[in-house]
Amino acid sequence: MRTEIESLRQQLVKEATTSASINAPHAASIDVSLPTAQIPAEPQCSAQHKDVWEVSYIDTRINDVYYPLNNNVDWLSSKIELLQQDLDTIRKKDQQPVTSIDVCTITSLDAKI
Image (cartoon, rainbow, N blue to C red; front, side):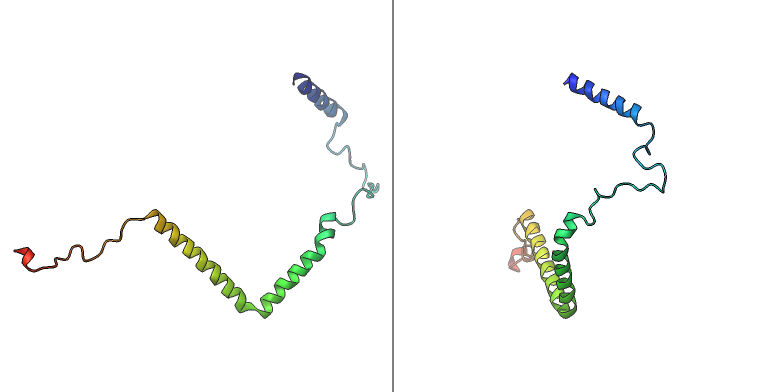
């Protein structure tokens, strides 16, 4: 463990002495071009998924234009489900028996006497 820490410290010292400036790896002049062969023209991720994204985007836009009521109904359905879940959690937390308003009502007039 100590040898690893010591080797890391030595590497940091070596890097600090070799790189005097943060601009050292960059070109000295704007007229000198950096090698661009290492930079891909298009990232692989977007190149692979571009068609999938375009298709899903177009499908979404078409559905929004041609079926706007369907979107509203779907939203309302999901909202109702969320509210139902909220009601269920409230009912689970408060499981006391429901008190009736008839509890305080006297059933007989003779009971007062």
